[in-house]
Each structure stands twice: as C-alpha cells, then as structure tokens.
Image (cartoon, rainbow, N blue to C red; front, side, top):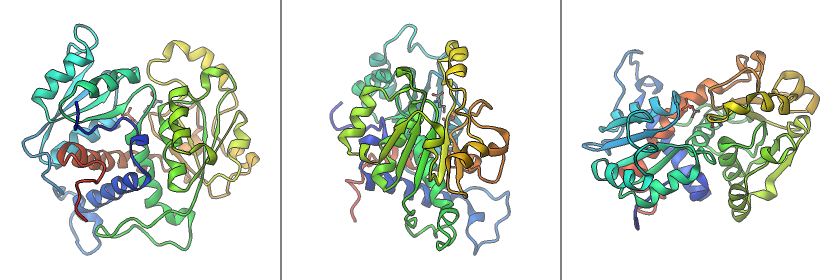
Amino acid sequence: MPGVPHLMTLADLTGPQISRLVNHAHYLKQVSLPWLAPQRQAKKNARLRMPSQSLFNKSIALIFSKRSTRTRVSAETSAVLLGGRALFLGGEDIQLGVNESPRDTARVIGGMCQGIFARVGEHEEIEELAKYSPVPVLNALSSLWHPTQILADLLTLHEHRHLFDPSSTGPSAPNKPLAPLRPLTIAYVGDSANVLHDMLVTYPRLGHKLRVASPPHPMYQCPTPVWDRVTQLGCDKDIWWGSDPREAVHGADVVVTDTWISMGQEAEKAQRLKDFAGYQVTEALCREGGANPDWKFLHCLPRKQHEVDEEVFYGPRSLAFPEADNRKWTIMAAFDLLFGKWDITGEKTVT
Ligand code: CP
Ligand code: NVA
C-alpha cells in the first residue's frame, strides 16, 4: 500500500541507512543491558532496561512458515523490551498457504497488528504480503534474502574491530556512534543462498571486499534477480566470485559460510553433499589459501558439520555465538525504527 515502509533486503537501504540501523542496535544493546555500562555495578540478574516504548500498545505478527530459533526468540523478546507484544503464527497455526492467500492474509493481519515480521518460502510470498499490507512488513528470511542476519554480522564485526585493527580500542560508549571498521576482505565459501545475497548488496557499499566460492554448477550461482540488484548498486566491482574455496579465502580477514542444505532443500541433501565436497571451512583450507593469519569466522547458525569443522566452529576464531546474540539487538533496532517509528530510512529523523 502506498506510503507504508517495508524492508525486504538491505538492498532497499543506502549504506548510511544500514550503518544507522547497526548504530541503533549498538545503542539499544548498551542501554538495555545495565551490566555492560562500566560505571554501574549491576548484578547479572538485573532486569533489562526498556530502551524505548515505541511498540507500546502495538502487536507484531510473526508469520513463520519455516523453523527458527534465533530470529523468533529475538523477535519475541525484542517486542517485550519495546513495550509491545509479538504473536507467533507458525505454518500450522494460520490459514496462510493452505486455505488463504498472502494477499488476504496481509489485509486481515495488517488490520489487527501494527507490523508483520515474516519468514516465508519463495521470496514472491513476502513481496505479496508487503504489497497488500497496511502495516510495515520486515523480511525474517525468504528464499532470496536474509537482511536481519547481515545487520547482526555487521554489529559483531564492529564490536570485535580490535581483532582486525590493533590500533582500535574496545566497544564504543552507548551515546557515541560505532567507530568505523577498517576495510576488510570477507570470504564466503558455500551455497549462493539468502545469507550470502544480503552480504553481496551490503559489504561493498560499506567499503569491504567480498570473495565468494561456490560449486560451478549453475544451481549454485547467484540468481538473476539478486545479481541484478548487486549490479544496480555497483557492488559487483568489489566482488570476486569463483569455484575454488582456497582462492576465495586468499587475504581474508573474515571467513563466512552457511549450511549447504537450506530449509526446504532436504530432498537434495545427497546431491548437495557430493557437490560441496572440498568446501568445508577448516584451518588447513584457510592456511593453504593464504587467509590473513588472524582470520575470524562467522556463521548464521544453525550449523552442521558439513560446512565447518569443530576446530574452527568452537575455536578462538569463531564469532558465531556473539553473532547469534546480536540477532536480538539488530532485530530490536529494526522493530523500533520500522514498526515503532515508521522511520527505517531515517527520513523522518530531525538531525
Ligand atoms: N540465523 C537464523 O536465522 O537462525 P534461525 O533460523 O534460528 O532463526
Ligand atoms: N540459508 C539458510 C539460512 C538459515 C538461517 C536457510 O535458508 O535455511
């Protein structure tokens, strides 16, 4: 509906708008967790502070047709801290996809709730929800995009910037913007799926280089609608894409992977395990490929052993669990600005 803001992918935002969201997440995290502030001696069991009441008297529908741990829990707990509530509507609970179209569902739920956070199968489903919803729709993962994951990855990289740049200090104070990250080389080894796609449209615009390796078969290459957005945004000039994982990790400060078998692809498991042989992220692969000796590791989770071995996943290079924690603060930032303030782009904010 005209005038209603939505967020389908980070390609919908400019680089500065993405940075504003990440900064807002940093602020919400520091304000909500009293024990993070060094001047306060709050006990670990202190209540979290409510950083904003922007969802007061608002209900947010969580329409999830696929499983979720991090995204769902982040959403439900964020709504509470913003003074509102979330309704979890799983695939077995509502008529969507069985007896009712996305169009009718959007009209009905949008009439009762003040925001829709939706995890769908095909990306077209969430576009359809957004087209007919009278309230903002935020993508919680679709076949093509996973915007809130990359917001969490960015916050995690900023929080750990001292690992990439010894001249920088620890985390920024809550009332100060996050210090910039030095330009990084980020390698992704694995499937061309939703997580990678939001990386492709985001990192180059924030000054980072991306190196990707996926198996050569056409089914593991970037889908045309995604690559069109990558090129429209001018991101392609900072992306190297090949099929050799060793070449991809060359010079990498950060190595990222995702499952080889995304939700809904379970029937392709045997073929995929064959096609991805040799793509597992290991110490040996990164050493042989010439990654930066201090490389760090990111993974959206849930993780399977196929794509990364135990040594890397549970080792000192892994930022996967801080990254998981940051799903909450970045989703909270998106809820506050999109559902609470209808100002995801910052256009309404008076500076
Ligand atoms: N990373 C992520 O989206 O995890 P969940 O599927 O558990 O939400
Ligand atoms: N590519 C994965 C991401 C899970 C968070 C999937 O779609 O299942």
